[in-house]
Image 1 (tube, rainbow, N blue to C red):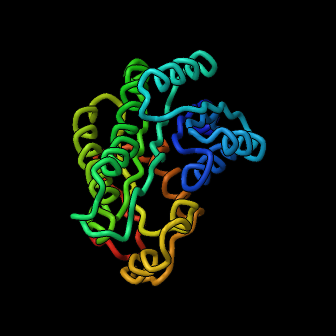
Image 2 (cartoon, one colour; image 1 turned 90 degrees about the horizontal axis):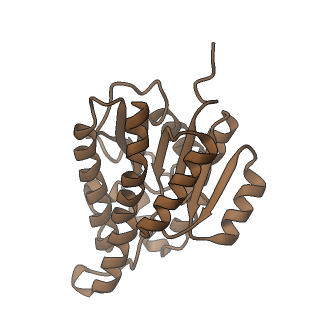
Amino acid sequence: MENQWTKKTAIITGGAGGLGYALVKRLLSNGVKVALLDHRQEALESAVVNAGGQVYPYALDVTDAKAVQAAIDDVVVKTSGIHILVNSAGITGETGIKSHEVDLNDLDKVLSVNVKGCMTTFKAVIPYMLQQKYGRVLNIASIAGKDGNAGMLAYSASKGAVIAMTKVQGKEYAGTGILVNALAPAVIRTEIVEKLPESQVTYMTDKIPMKRCGTLEEFAAMASFIVSEENSFTTGFTYDLTGGRAVY
């Protein structure tokens, strides 16, 4: 039986670390060619050295539409197609503050990276997926986008927007062979979580019935299913990865 992965090419934003890098390693181990879009040059270089497999690094800002388009076009030239897009790049912004204390510039930055960043890649990738009548798009959301985390207005609002965007795109492209889904993790101890105040992490973990953080391996396992051929009748949906916190 032919390996479904070996002829696939994936674009992963924020792929040089955290959740994105965990998925990068899993896809590479299955034979997928992976292009990493990340603004951290040193992290990209390290990822390429340590990941193994066919990796194409691009140091760029995901909110820069021209840079993203140029990178996507280059990936297509090098690999002859794009089958998977995972939007994993994201920032938390200021945390541990009430809404009236939120700096509007910080709010703009978080929304730009977390929401606009998903759109710049989507707009660049979708024409290629439409040509081949196949594609899997995964937007990394958060339980904060469903429930709202107190003290994290900008982040929660941005992830709520990602979930809404996923619903719209899932409906719009449902008949094209392109599936668009999201994944909403609870707290997983990645680099981005390590930078949060411990009180904020405890606040989030206490809400999880399993009383623990999720693991990168658990994330990669679920994400790889969502972008696989086996996932063929679900689109516009937000998958749960919250240890029982979200039951809807």
